Image (cartoon, rainbow over all chains, first blue to last red; front, side, top):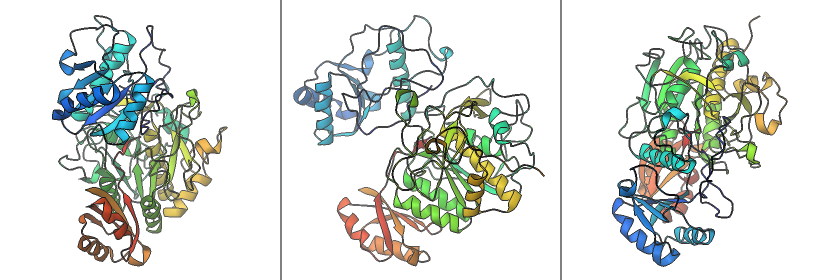
Length: 457
Length: 71
């Protein structure tokens, strides 16, 4: 399924924020009747807090129509939506109301009156394809969205599968028999690319039994408490595949930019697809200690202000001859007039920020634009739409979207340049940007342009 | 308790453990000492943050951003 990767702090009830109304793949518009406006999702301190919350909502905000998770299921319901839906097992409540009520809710959440851990805009989620949804009895657009929303909440809490970054399954028709469209676009043909260069991929881990990646990593480590490096999410495996997938995969076209790279895999995002800064920093430290020339970070937080830590860490990495490459972010909805902004850690001036382009080399709808803060710019672009790579679950491959998918292309290309000319650190940064192929797009969107591989001769 | 990321200044880049000890002595619980990148992770009362910022060798103390996601 797809989910809006933008994570605004709290919905402006007058702005209609929080709706994933475009998933970048030309999904048809919602059928009538139109879904109700998005509400607010409250994360409670614990499952036992539901009763106290409903009392507070009734007293403070005037929301008194309460339903519980026991009411879910059993087929389509009417269009009358309860104001408060309590998902007791998850410790989550979904609130709908008029703008005044949501405004009061916003104030109560900010002042701590509700005693909740988080108040976030409700996301309307879309399935990847019709086959992932029940077809009988027919469900209207809103119930499909509700179904997916609940599924996503359950997935986030329990045993998530699938990418959670705005990813979207694509047909793969843009690829040919030999190479993915992305590898062809960046000129990654060399089967020995990356030899002698170490790249670390810090993400959700890797599917160690995947036939294309089995035994591939020189070292692995998990920085997520209680989880091994095994990737139950898929995102990390996809990124690893784009960096280091084999020259001759088990099935389909080649999708790895640098098949001979020396690979490190660090798990810094949980199987649920989230991570704490401490895990990420520990992963970067580990990667540098293990000799990584390039660190691929297909992750981020929608924090517009650059953080001192990444500014300094990026600089220290460069001084050691290493390059941090990070995803610019997927918080744009350009088709809706929202260009987004580069989030952390990509917005550090010492971290190379990567935007996503589609097979037409147009900037992807979701790809974040440069911000105004110092360093908060896009530095380079790479293929990030309909990107085929390895996946832990059958059939073993997935084509998906995201600046996450563009980032490992650049990490792999960085390895190619390091191998080709012995470039490292700041010099490697310069080689990537100076050799990038200019695009007929604003530099605020794609930086220097499309990163490309060194060509023979 | 608040999770914080403490960036060690360049003058103490080779003395990260020493800075970490000072952070601990100030009342924070050090959760990771990252020598290679010059960072100390810790948890502490939010009221202690300003004090930590004044310790020798500390360049910055930032409240940890916790909601990193795949992109």
